Image (cartoon, rainbow, N blue to C red; front, side, top):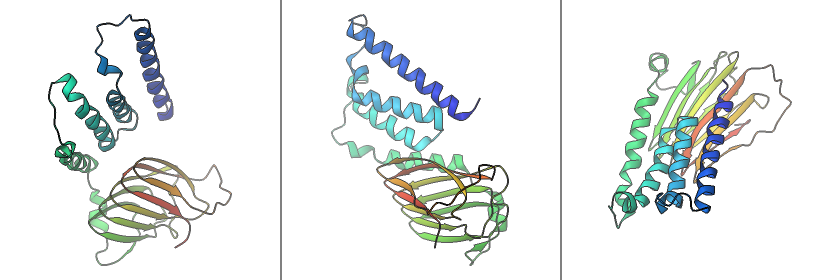
Length: 233
């Protein structure tokens, strides 16, 4: 079953269940259901759960669920913290877990060229932490890869590259940072970026694309960060 269909089914299920619960509540048929179930923190928990089930993006889902549970702790667990920012290290923990699960490409480690920005790699795994870097990819069978920016930035230049046949994927995680991806103007690109206090913009000067050509999917999320796609240096 296509991924978009799965997402629609999950979203439809969420809406139907929430609608039924709210309807029964309006007719006072659920007197036993706690009032906090209908609160805005619970909405954050539901949003985080939806992101986790449909997009499998751990960090943003944990952020939404964590913030929601924080404001529900007093109602559910009778625990209350005066200072919300006592829990901010949980964001670092979530980022660390995500990096472990994302892994690192052994192919990239074996074939990278130390001291040079140029590369003919078919697959990239670029990490910028408290720094910035630039990569020029010349591969004629580019298949995508991973870009991670944490308090840092990256520029990936694909102007001289060619996509491999079929679907290719770049997975981006940006936290307090940014990414710039430079591609030929006529590439077929589909963007699916979840932005929290940030944004990701396609700034290309569009040319006519051929639907039969390979597709580059740019997926991931940004938190207090952003990125852009453009077709010139």
